[in-house]
Image (cartoon, rainbow, N blue to C red; front, top):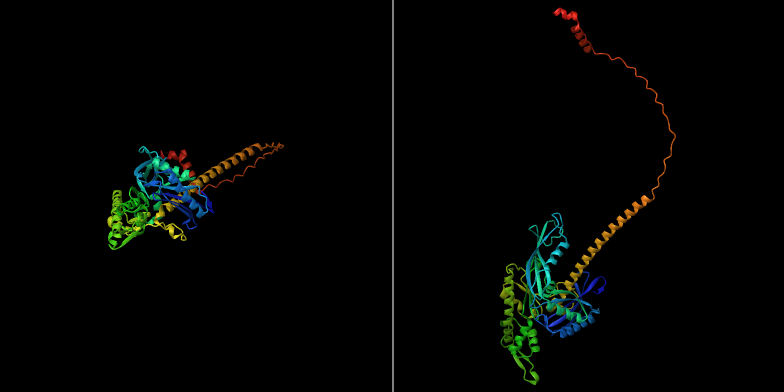
Length: 477
């Protein structure tokens, strides 16, 4: 990654069905994303999120990257890329990890080992794991709040949300990026990237459903307690609405796209019958008039189908009654008028249009504060997080190496000091001193003073002698 001042420059490449966007960003001193440049090109080699034509996709990537380089003045060599499509699926799994003993503290290495175990799961042929996302942790059967790092126990358990996709789809994306002269340093699921740029911490804690309506697919991600709970992909989005308008109004695809963007509405009752749109005819033919109410009816029929599929996924996740934050709609398809009201009517949840302004710097151009750029900006945010994690890991390893080197150096110094002390020890012969004789003089005998017997002792002695006198004893016989 190229570096300006202290913070690295990160490039997000959104390979979508309708557009390919490359955005160059850098984190400022306030933690916000400063956009340095943006490039956009029409995507004609992608259908429903999957690459269907390598050459056309490569040309579009080159055009978008060239525009971004020109605006930012930065040579782009590596990018973070988003992946989506109806081939994306998710599953839940649980893992048990045994610690050394009960006094062992859980470390980041233990969690990484559990994640690595999840990557060894048996999958369907042709599938690969894209993300392994930890959900809840348990130590000795007791739930842990957020992270178990630093806690003691003998058994660590965790629930994981595993996102998988087709190997061929991921390889085609990588091939397109590499043929464009770039290095793909990260492959990130697009709804996760969009949620990073659109959702707030409060919404993800309270419970929220992100609906990213793109060109080829509608991506869903449900969060609760800051943990991703459910992901899904609906194979209907903005492009199929354009096709419906093209068929229903009998116009060209370009005209249908303009009608959808400029005059499209998700609620027919919000338009009057006498509101007419006039479009030029083909090759000198007469102009064609289209009722705005009729246009809204065509759009409404398809949007109701998409919203009903979204509500089905919400109910299937089991969090329909726990989404305090409601629904957040983003992506290019979220720009339809009255879409918020349609979503609220069918789901019974509050809704809002998600703009990628939560983490952008204040001086960002208004053109970038558009839901169609949510994924590309989210890729930059996720890329910065990944670089920070790598930096923390590198600092930790560096500190461990330095500590080990210091310990080895101290041990070497002690060994050298001991060796030096042994080598420089000189035995000094003791001087033989002439013997000194001391004559012991006999101590003078102490003059013993006669002890004075007490009168009681004298009386007892006289009584004893009196009884032992034979003349006295004979008198008693």
